[in-house]
Image (cartoon, rainbow, N blue to C red; front, side, top):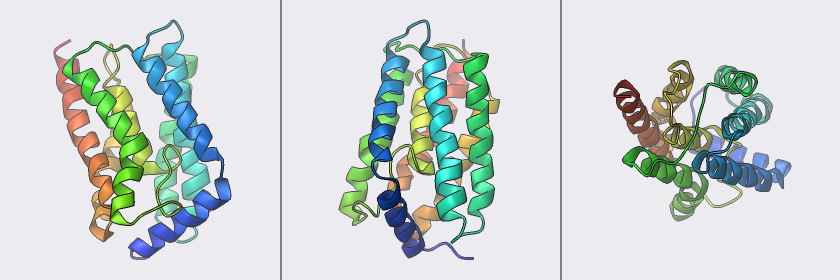
Amino acid sequence: MVLTLDMLLSTFEKYNLDIWPIQILAYLLGIAALFFAIKRTQYSGRIVTGILAFLWLWTAVGFFFLYFGPVYNLAYAFGGLFLIQGILFLADVVRPRFSFGFKGDVYSIIGILFSVYAMIGYPVVGYFLGHKYPQSPPFGLTPCPTAAFTFGLFLLTDKKVPKLFLLIPLLWALSGVMPVSVGILEDIGMIVSGVLGTALILYRDRNE
């Protein structure tokens, strides 16, 4: 089955209309995750990875399995990858390995930019491309904004990011060439966040 722009836009439209007002919850969770990633507290790591777990698991089941899979068979495999990533984040809530905190360095600043693009840049760019709500990917509830947001938060860690956590988000970022090729040009930001974010994370962690 060939991926098409109409397929994506019609899926986004039905999905957005059916799940409203979960989009508001996703934004509230995104804001909370960004807040606790910047303002370090005793429980910041658990809160942030718990929110990421919810977003990745929701996207796996809610978007891929229930909505996109029936119209694009490969989506079930994609959903499986998001399910695995969500479980990884969920396991981190129990045994934390992530630690977050704003350092004011280039990594933190780029991390905030990636996060803001995922939350605000996607709908703004999409609007000018003609992908207006409800034919737009909702933040935190569809794969590409979720992946971009994840890389943003990874750049706000103050300890090394476990490499296992980078693999699936990077693979998904690289796969962004597929939707970009059919006209979802806002996903270029996700590709940039994945490739540049991974390079920055590996360079930063190697020198710590």
